[in-house]
Length: 149
Image (cartoon, rainbow, N blue to C red; front, top):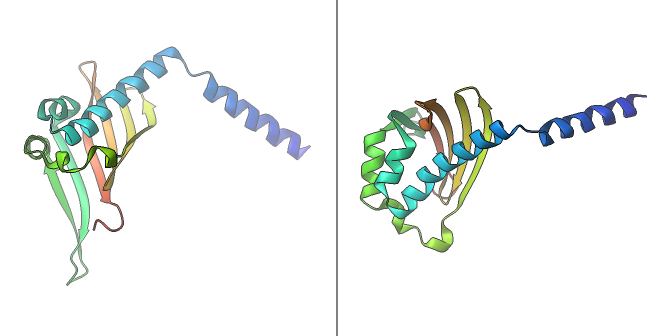
């Protein structure tokens, strides 16, 4: 009896995911497009594309640990700083064949969403907000991949 119940619950879960509404699919596509503006804008050195993806009050953060003291600190980058780094061509240094750009939309609720972007040297966890009808990245918490630290 327990196995049958588990099977039914599992099947209902699959059906619920398969029956995603067209509106939800459109929102996820718009979120994905915003994240790809961020990722591909970085790699292409396209500052306008990067700026289009970001909310002006973006906070991009990483936890760094001082090798000497062992103490952690939170380093932060603003939208303007990220746009300037993009404009200076930092992402263009990554050869096209090595430009990883995997995007997953993790969750969407009303005007809030979270996504993950896996890039060549790091992973970004992004929070997005729908502002004036457009998805904008408002927060990024990122971590360097092993070997890049």
